[in-house]
Length: 264
Image (cartoon, rainbow, N blue to C red; front, top):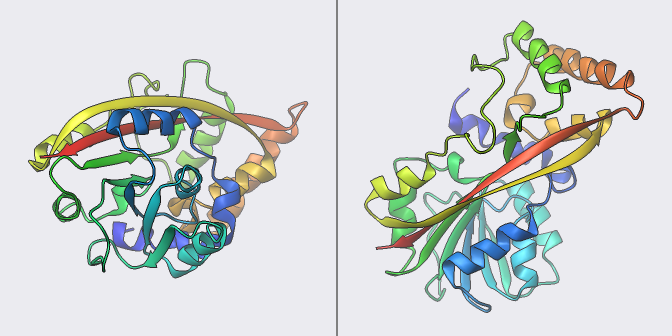
């Protein structure tokens, strides 16, 4: 399915996203502030805030934040989550066409698990247009990580994806977190608008019951868009594989690669 279609699927699970998705590590925010040198009450612009997963930690530090979100339901969840922070405003709009109104220059534009969904033909020009020279762009994601000792559950469940025709055809197992390629820094440089300040990798793990893991899968665009019969079969296999474990849980590792650039 097209990027344009898939990026709208998250709005259908707005009420579940905040609960099911993991929080980003505290050290990531420490690195973000160290690498950019920004301090409260600097003016931040968040692209694709969802329900406020990455907005809340920075709002708590006292930053002024304008958060732009494509999905109306997600934006509504974000407003509810951020209702106690008067310095945060949530705007429902596509970033590609949004224009700020009466806002001081932004010191930092950032996107958490959202930048890949922005039109690649426009996103760096749009970011550069909204930042002064010396302003910063920061991007990070939360992807499945596979350290050398990753949970064998994922090898078993990958066979199910492949049998259903839902595998991506990539070699198994995937690269370790240290070897995982990251094209974002090269994109920054190739844009001609940003110089890379640095990158930082953060790896963490969470334990999930079958139902907790299924709730997480229900927030991924590919699973939301999957045929109902395939999704039902997949989730049945998740339950079956975990039912034979003494504690009924799996361990999923996460990787966030933070890339920070400075506006030229």
